[in-house]
Image (cartoon, rainbow, N blue to C red; front, top):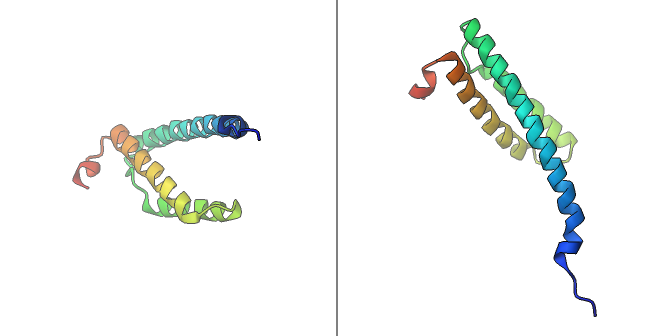
Length: 103
């Protein structure tokens, strides 16, 4: 009998996952680069960092995308809620809005 080597069996999958992780992190970085530009625009025009209607739109849209891609919509909503929360933190820093401290 041959001994099963988990490392050999899993290595191609892990390599593919690592490659996807590289892409995902790069895309998140690009998303937050744009978030910073949005924060600058909000600061320039004295807009609130938090735009509840847009937040709901994004969460609904990504939940629909999750369904289309056979993913758990609530998981994707939670993931995006965390990203939106971080985006708000960045935008509060850029705009100097004090609302974050009050929440």
